[in-house]
Length: 439
Image: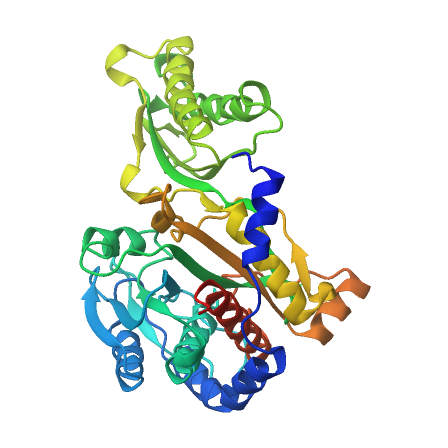
């Protein structure tokens, strides 16, 4: 997307902070002890995707007490809270609710001890290893301030709690359940996400693409099995699958423009059961990442072509060609931050937090179904998701000096500086919202 500099400048003039920095910050800090109690409760009681029943009720009840019109069970377990406050834009603030099937090993006094069963029937520990508990707590802090300060903004506020972000289904389910038809459709959509590689309290933003398309592809490589001592009597699917794995990498290195990011990772290769048996099948599980729809289509088509082409080269019979299953239902679109929104809001953040706490981030190849809200009506909806650093300062400095690795998101050891994440995330969301909805 190309953006004229004049358009950016014109928009930037409109984005002026409606409240004094100390007023907003003092309000957030005063509410922080109460917010931390909510955070600790959410952290101790995580719920898996589409199982967020306790979480949804707890936060829906909070929104009702604040005067929002609340509807539950949107997209199975999602929550929509609406507050109308005169004329103006519709701004949607989103937080995700689900936790991960991870056994917590942080050693925190309020660490999760929850055991649950996944949709696949696997019993597992559960942990907020991606920081969604900080997102939800920031959501509460934002709702509290906005409901108590209606004289500072005008328009319609739509605050949603989304299920199942971790499996890429929650946003789609809420949209399919009428999020933009049963409730006011937003002009702007905002969210923040904690970051495991950035010092706590920092704010990072990307202008344009922020996160990638995410596709899952299964390849069943079929062969003709037999005795390992007589390979000439077989068609070995392991050898064929190995060729496919190697050839797939040429899609990125030789068929995609080097300046157009793309990733094909074979995350699982499974075949056979015994040393001296050539199996009749091998299975590959792939994750495929891209930004543009055109690159995504080229990668998926290339995977199908290479799988079949290598099988033909190996002399595989037509009835034993590989089966390529593109899991379209699990697709998560690339997340795009509208520059005409992201750039002016970055100015607001820099004025509020200081230049040294706000950084322009590079886009990453991770995925987020937050992308679906803007894509539902890209001509009329502008969206921005930004990062809030969560690494405790002493741990960050120690890692910088020693070169040691920090726990990543989804790690059982990920324990952000929750107070700084919540305080910074809440303040940033509120600063952006108040600017967009200023009277």
